[in-house]
Amino acid sequence: MTADKLAGAIREANGRGGCAFVPYIMAGDGGLGRLEEQILFLQEAGATAVELGIPFSDPAADGPVIQQAGIRSLESGTTLAKVMQAVGGFSEEIRIPVILMTYLNPVLSHGIAAFANDCREAGIAGVIVPDVPFEEDAVLEDALRMADVDFIRLIPLTAPDDRIRAIAGEAEGFIYAVTVDGITGARDSFAGSSADRLAWLREIADVPVLAGFGISTPAQVREFGRSADGVIVGSVIVDAFHRGDLVSISELIRAARNTPVPAE
Image (cartoon, rainbow, N blue to C red):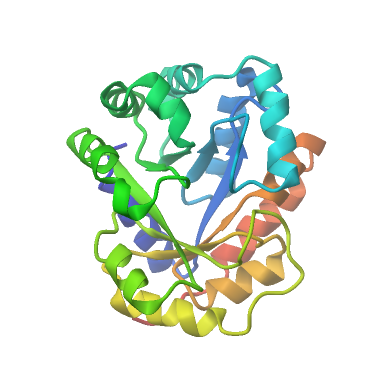
């Protein structure tokens, strides 16, 4: 699954009459032996792509649920190399794009060139590294581009317009629109201007725009799906897998599939 399939998968989901749905899971939470089962469940349930978190001891963007999942994963011996090896081992069964979400230190420890090449070998479609500033990401972006892997950038909706335009102009795969100030985790409410900002971002972007951070209920999936090309849901998915609640995950995906995105 090459990088050019990422934006295409999102647009295909939109073309079927719904918004794209990208669940986040923590690789190795409960052991890497569960990873294939989890990804294939999400695939069969109708997820557009899967964002696969790499556990890190000092996460900057993760809320309590994902932090605890990361601790459990690290305690089970999960590493970046083991995750890519595991995904590569069943990549032929995966029909949807897989996105890695990691922090910079594991990438540097692995080696940037080796990381990019191993992503390609494992069939990874995109990479998110939230602690790399836009002004300093060229080396990582160049290595991933040579490996045909999209470098996905986050854009806070509260950022100044000129910065949003600059980042959007370099976007690959899709734009990860951050809907809240702060870390990941379920929210009861969001800033009232989110819909307007998402609509404007879609106007200026050449790639799909997905809303993420804090989205945790079918109603919120529908709310943001009416303003963006899709949604990313993390903490509630991680918690549901930890508790064995597959029904709640299916309900979230169903809400996305039944929410048409706004016209271009």
